[in-house]
Image (cartoon, rainbow, N blue to C red; front, side):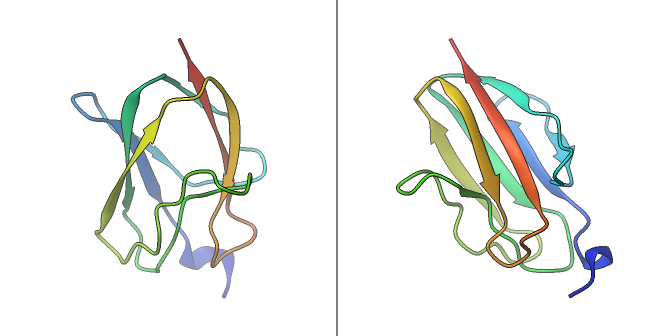
Length: 97
């Protein structure tokens, strides 16, 4: 698949405005408060995931276009993630107190 297929995922905290992102190697991390639920929404025409690079970390599962997943971020730190279907789609989530 070409990179043009993969336009946007959206990350947002429930009750707050969403931040649209297109994860890439140069992606700048968004900071979220610990113990908040982040909503990952696939706003693209292709299937995507938001999967933590660390084994046992968060995983949105396969998101079809328009689908969303809720991920609870409890541990403070910086967490790299990727799309399981598109290896070039990478991002970072920073969790703070």
